[in-house]
Image (cartoon, rainbow, N blue to C red; front, side, top):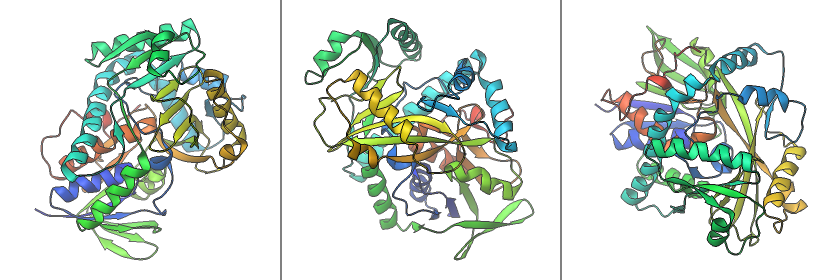
Length: 415
């Protein structure tokens, strides 16, 4: 039976939910407070990365975050502050940084990531989209033997999970990118990963949804919801009120602000990431992560993007010049002939990624509201997991057997 579905949030998660729900026959309205032309869905590295098996909450991450707390150029920055939500999240995140959690999460993250990657190709083929999408894999470039050894351990985990990956030499990398000058000792190569140009996909998906009758309300803020007998009956914005049979909350880093109106406490923090890009020739023809510098490089359609940092410092879009400089410096250390100019750094952009307390997304219905499905908390994996999250949300709304076990994604889970 067709339902009136309101989706709060128009990023990659919200639009993916809209795609599958519309395809399933529902009447869909997407509401977003922005112009839907910026933010994390547009400034990310464009990776579809099953290789990213280990969740953000892993042994040593919190300790490293504390160590880097006073380094203004560090790739991970957790700003200490006397804020109840932040303190609760920090304690829960620290409790989640265990090997037991990683062992449980790895096969689940692999499954949802492979599903997401494959659905991009399925959508492109079925809808005749033309967005940039390539199967070139991902290089993890290393400047020290210690890091290379750590990367090889991740390669072994990936192989155990059935993914295509291997450790390669610096000479191998040079053979793959002959026009690039590199300063590395070796790399791991995850052939299982693909990449894209995010802005192209988002533009095509928006146009497609509009052509199929999906209503998209931009620059419209949700201010309240009406609840009757444990169900949302309407969603009120600063412009209008909408009736709803089902509501999907996919508002990224803003989700917890809205969930509080429903008396649902989601442990969630905004993780800011930055991007710089250049149209100059760089010789970088494969997606590459600079392992020690924590910078992601993507050859996109007509330009090269450099993305990095995880800055947990609240919801704001301030550009921290020191972190932009850190990304540029990192690139130059690995690729000595690539120089990012002051002009390119001056137009750096950022996006906020929603980070849960265990590095796993929240996908599912809360027991506190019968017709609310939550879809957020994907951290750096939002782009990879967009389509798979959309598919799972559609299956939840339609009350059919989901494509995978979602127990680890439950919004009501404790930490």
